[in-house]
Every structure is written in C-alpha cells, then in structure tokens.
Length: 582
Image (cartoon, rainbow, N blue to C red; front, side, top):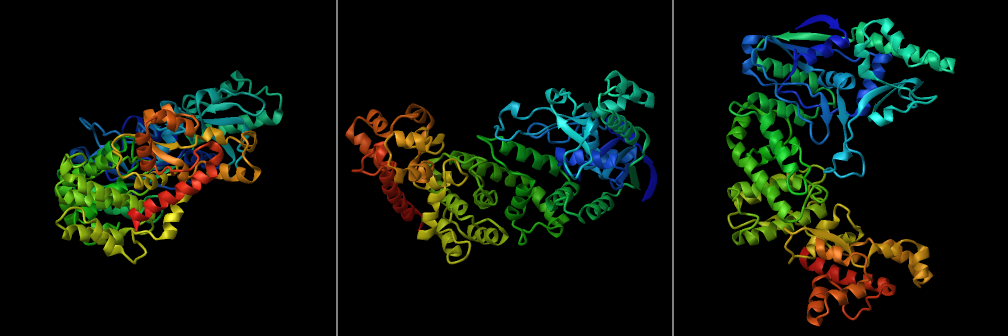
C-alpha cells in the first residue's frame, strides 16, 4: 500500500465525472443525509480534516474479473437510491474506492448533483413529496446551528431565490465555474455583494466565497492510499478491516460485501437489491431491506447459527446460499403475496422478522404459486393469519429474535401436517415469547387508536370471516367529525361530565370497524343510527351486520348514547378476543 500526493476536490470530482473513479461491488450504497453532507462542507470550510481515502488500482487486464458501479449523481430517496452498473467496455485502468465512498459521493452531489428526499406527512406514491434540491451557501449570514459555522443548505429553486438583508443563497456547484480569483470578484460585484448596505455582511460574503473557492480549487484535502493487486480476497480483507472498526458501516453491509465477493454464478448485490425493490413496490408497499433478506438466507438455508457475523458468511455457506437462492427468493416473494392478501402493508406489518418463519414454512413446502388463493391451503392460511397477528401484537420478535427464530424453525422442520400453529404455541408457552394472551394483555389491545400500526392486527382478529384480499378501511362507527370540540359536543346536548369521555374515545378500538372502501364512502359522516337503518332496512340483514361487527343489541345507537355504546361494544370485542387468543 502506498501513499500518493493528495488531490484538490475539483480534481477528484472530475475523475468521478470521467468515470476514472468507480465503486467495487463490495461497497454499500449511498446512505448519507443532507445534514451529513452540509456538515462535511462546513468542516472543509473550517479546515477540519476529513480523514484519508483508500483507493484500489485495477489494471485493464483484470477489470472484467469484477463488477463495478458508478457513483450516484442525483440521489432520489424513492426512485434513485441504487448505483448504476459501470460500462467497462474499452476501459483503461480504473481506481476503485475502498474507503471514502460516502464522502466522495457527498462532495459530488453537493457540487454537481441533486438530493430528493421525502417530505414529512406526504405519501410515498406522491411525486411532489420528493422535491429536487441542490446545495447552497448563504453568503450573508453564518449558520444558526451552534455546531456549524457556515450555512450550507439543500434548497429547492424557489427557496434559493429568497434574497433579503440576511440571505443570499449561492449555488455551491457554481464555484466550479469560477476558476480564477478574479472570477470570484466578478461574481461578488455583479451580484452587488460588495456594495451591500451592511459593511460586515459584505466582508462576510467576500471571506466566505473566497474560502469556498480555495477549498475546491486550491487546497488538497483528498489524501489517499493506493492498493495495487488483483487479489479480491486481499482487497475484501482490507475493506472489512477498514470498515468494521466504527458504527458507520453496518454488519449487514459487510456481510453483503462478503456474499457479493464469494458468489460465483450470480451477482448477490443485484439479486438482493432487485428482490428488495420488487417486494417494497408490491401491493400497497412494504418496507424490507437487505438485512431482512440476508437473515432469510441464514434461516431458510438451514444453518445452525443464524447470527449476523462474518463467520456465518464463509465460503461454504455462501455457495450453499447461492445454490438455494432461487428457492429462497421464491419463498420470500410468496410470503409477501400472502401478506398482501391478508391486508398487510408497510404501515401495518410492524415486524419484518416475524415474517421469516412464514417464509421458512413456504420454503419447506415448495412455495406453491397458488398458496394465497387455493382452497387447498385455506386451513394453512387461517393458521398463518392467526400466527402473524399474534406475534405482531405480542411483539414476539422484538429485541433479539434469533432464539425464537431457531425454535420456530425447528418446529416447522419437524412437522409434516400443515402450518404447525398449535405446536408453536405450546413450544413458546410459559416463556417471555409466548404468543398466547392473558386478560390484561387483551385489555391492553383497546389502547390502540385509529390508524395506529397495531390497530389493523387487532381489528383483523375480530373479523375472521372477512375476505382480506379486498381493501378494508378503518371506519369510525360514530363519525369523528361529530367530536370536533367540547363546544360542539355541548351544543349537541352532551352532559359536561361525559364530554371528556367522548373526546378521549372516538378514535378508540371500540369505535372502529373494518369496512370496504365504497360502503365506507357511502357511510361518510352520517349519524350511525340513521345510517344503519338506511343501509339495512331489512331486520334480518341488520341483525347479521350487528352480530358481525359487534354492535350491541338493545342499546340505543343515538349519538348521545355514545358512552354506553362504547362500554357495551368493548365487552363484546373482549369476549371475541378471549375466544380467539387464549
């Protein structure tokens, strides 16, 4: 390994642009936030060291032995998180980045790229939730963050156009075009920053822009070591040693690197990434990651030790996983087809680890393509549905899940008569991971509120006859619009000593039912006693609806009787829970 003369940031960015710098397949993908990128640029402006880099020179004749990726240039949290494969046709020697990818990508995005992350409280399928932002530097004011000196911010075009006494947002990438110091002067003059009414602001702008020019064009903060040679084993060992000392690189990143290096026929990174993307886009969307897939590989692969550690990703195990990959990936896909048919999606599937045992069962029986719909597997589906609801509500797979995963896998491996729910219940009975409920635990289910993550699993338990392949909405039996305020409730004649009960319970489980989309829209904000008579004028049909939805008989269904309704319906649901959970 040799130390080489350092580079300016502009020189390094040009090498990324020309694809002289690439990423080996063992590298993880870009994970830095906008705040981390802003802090990196602030550190450079303050002459803080940004650590050395480690590069691997791969000679032209050896390039085709390995898979390489380009740097990501315009990051999009939903649509563009993956590095594109590099086209190495006719390529001369290349330099692969072993240590420093996050910093180098951040420098590139800050100077030449964009960053699109999801805005809070907007849906993932809304394109407007991911505005394109570039990095800007305020030339008139320092940062208002006490940990930072300079105000670097990722802004949309309209936000960056704000100009007043405190703000002039300079597009950081523009500095690449200002090659000579006089061009910096020209920019300041053309934008009236020298003639600013506040002398201190003008001085700050001058100092700030010239400092940025210096760190990009003149200073040489890119210090790096070069490794030469074609041994991937040696490079992998260096990579793991460099990256396993801190917490920035997760163990799953290292393990994926090992798998990528040791698979011979398939590209582990591409296979796992593709599977993750496919599942996360399925139905209403899920939220799995490579950690989940790698854990499935260990559990479904049949290895005794399923812990996340490098020893378990040795060459023999990796060969075994590659040989079983088609069956493993098929089982994982079949599992999420099933979960979608049971009404689950990213917000209601509160533990991915809980799903691994379902994958293990489907893997064992060959993952039949019609498992989620064939009458032949109805009993299996019912048992799996009860299992997943139970373990999610009991949070069985919270904390350290490996022990319970091993136990359930042993039960599945030794059972030959359908999904062994009863055997699993008995195996875990009496332990801290029991999936059976006592009365207190049932009572705690009533604390779940409208649209909370665990509410769907709770409601699904008391609606066993519904076809969950249809989309059901969580409907307020007594519409929430009638609970707007104490003043509104008082106007409706609700007694003062009951108003707090109304406001504290309209979102509670006992005021919720599962209703298909169209009936839910038809019900909308109608008074419940009026709606039930309108919807079910036939006494027999109305009685069936009331029994199915635990609507207490012989109870006044008017709004004023809400408290009594909740108390009585809670008793009916509690009895249903107890029948199904104990």
